[in-house]
Image (cartoon, rainbow, N blue to C red):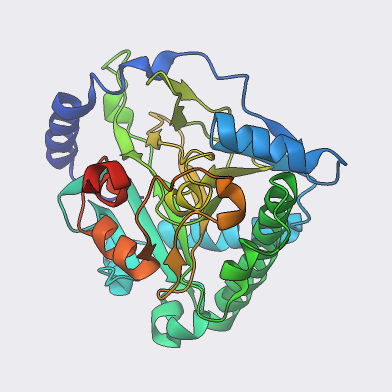
Amino acid sequence: MVVLSKPAIKQMASSYMRNSMAAAGSSSAAFFSGVPLIDLSAPDAKHLIVKACEELGFFKVVNHGVPMEFISTLESESTKFFSLPLSEKQRAGPPSPFGYGNKQIGRNGDVGWVEYLLLNTHLESNSDGFLSIFGQDPQKLRSAVNDYISAVRNMACEILELMAEGLKIQQRNAFSKLLMDEESDSVFRVNHYPPCPELQALKGTNMIGFGEHTDPQIISVLRSNNTSGLQISLADGNWISVPPDQSSFFINVGDSLQVMTNGRFKSVKHRVLTNRLKSRVSMIYFGGPPLSEKIAPLPSLMKGEESLYKEFTWFEYKRSAYNSRLADNRLVHFERIAAS
């Protein structure tokens, strides 16, 4: 739990309400029933994935092949960590860029009702000293994270290869090879959104847990517990609430994939609202390319079209993204129209 005094909670809640009541005003809307559900074992999965990426940039997958044991073990270890006293959790922070963070998101003034762990998917980069805060046996956590990331990365690559097939790209691993590369700049994040019962009296309002944004990488794979809060923005700008499903995974198209498909796939804008009474834990794998990888529309998808984007490396885009605010349109700086 995020440990704050009651005056601090009231002050923080008051500040958030001034900034986010209007934005979160639609939070009481009914759950959206139109999230595409894709069975990865189905013969038509590749076509359904392409359709979902074009229309929403977001979908849910079942028959994903990730063992429930891996999911439950890592969630249990994460819950133990977030239940520690704040002073103990802070031994793993502040994130620079990896480690424990509390309320501050990035370095440009964004805040949320959230605490989190950001880990390098190359776990050797996360020292035993850092992992020892999880208990007497850091190898237990290392093993749990390794098992989970390996399984989720494999699933992400399967999805990306189905995408390539659905797009009739001759090279089936055109996208997935970037995640499997030894230099892949992928990260893993565990978010904890504590309940905020002090908001119970403020009927019809919610606190922003994690503000609206798109993910800069190629693909994001999200799994959360059975607590609601996730919302996505539709093409008309309306926010809709996504029903929680702890046995499935949600897939986000990232900015880089939008560029590689020349805008055919849409990077989905999303946010998280806090739950007044229940804690929400989410685990997200962000599949990114190597830092030196050049990001541009794939020639096989152009079909005589002009590129909507300037070519850039992942390092250049990542640097630009991390120097921006969460809600900024990060791709606008790389659009050819903006450059002309």
